[in-house]
Image (cartoon, rainbow, N blue to C red):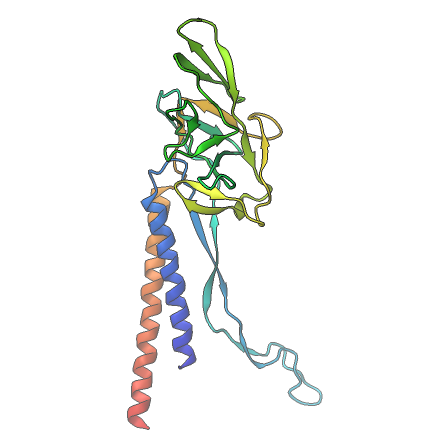
Length: 262
């Protein structure tokens, strides 16, 4: 295949992936605690026709050489973990994290854990605090029967008032997890992330301690997607795709002309 066609094809693939990422950001603009992604690209290896600094005569060397690029590719898909705006819900079991940290939940396997910023909590039939999908929040918290009011402080203390007592009693402690490299977390869907070797192991701690964020009861964290910004990114990627496709058409026309005149 002609090198120009290969270069243009690599550009089309890269721009198409960029459009996919922007589309996913826009599709999740209203997903609680969703973190937008950013495509990062790199150029492909170069063909060295003349090595920079190679001698052209006995006394003269080539100062710049001659290298031809072979295209581009997506290098990574970086998650941007900036905080989303806080949305008031007035629901006692909606909890947002302001600052660093993730809620830890136990996956159905029982031996694996996942992490989320989406704090729309529920209570199952056994009084255990879970996510909407039923995954248990860790460390486990059980709400006793007959609770009239639940209070969650900024540092994660869960207190409850029962029908038999007007005094609040502490019934649990919400802990949150942090990672040395949040960019290394692997998104798996359902607003969940898994730890990887790149992220490092989760470090659990109480909110508002050792750099951890604080909890906001009655609120949910919104998506950090800026729709206007993503629309601009979409238009840029679309224009780049269209221009690169014109390069494919130009090379194809040139090759047809060459085959006709050969």
